[in-house]
Image 1 (tube, rainbow, N blue to C red):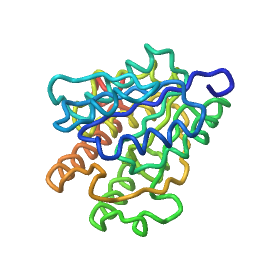
Image 2 (image 1 turned 180 degrees about the vertical axis):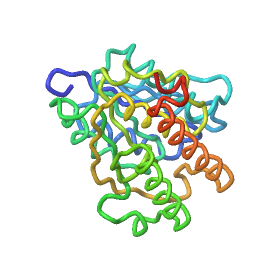
Image 3 (image 1 turned 180 degrees about the horizontal axis):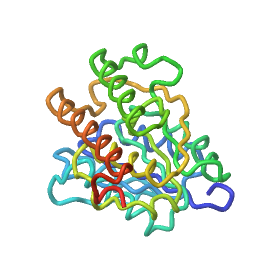
Image 4 (image 1 turned 60 degrees about the vertical axis):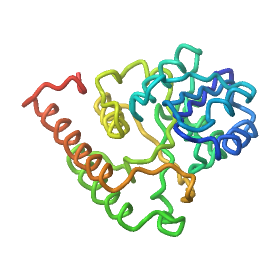
Length: 247
């Protein structure tokens, strides 16, 4: 716990057997996490078998692959049902270090922010850490576009390392979001729509063969989804359209 607040880590998992234990051990080493909820999206490897042997891990299984966004919907519902006051998403592929959990929890637990993002861009080390150049360029373009259209000042919208307060998760309608990767972007747009403050901290990342990554074709589809979300946000703000994402 952190100052009497229950800390729940959610892990959207797909074929993470090779990196799960390493990620888990580093999470538990932070000594503030009460529960880990792992949602397996019909992995074809031994992710579930490995997870079920780990202490303090609740495993939820999707019988068929439902998508990254659908996985997160299950994660956050389960975290709220488990009484989580501070909910932190950590990918089990060990791309983002769990050593930032105490810092992220403190920003929420002290009432400073309702959302904290682990940014790969702050600090300027993304390319040095191994982010492919084409992904870096796409990240910067999309972030610039979204900041202009949604009138925000985030360093990136595309990190998978995120922490939320219970109040925030109860205030946004995640069920209307995509079941695919653009869920992440839609969720941040909803957070900005509701007027929640967002903090960012520098996050070192690792790029290696076991780390999950979407291919170029899905990245292009994700990019257009981000652009569409930002435009919907602006048109809804102007009262030109009504969108179930922003109500």
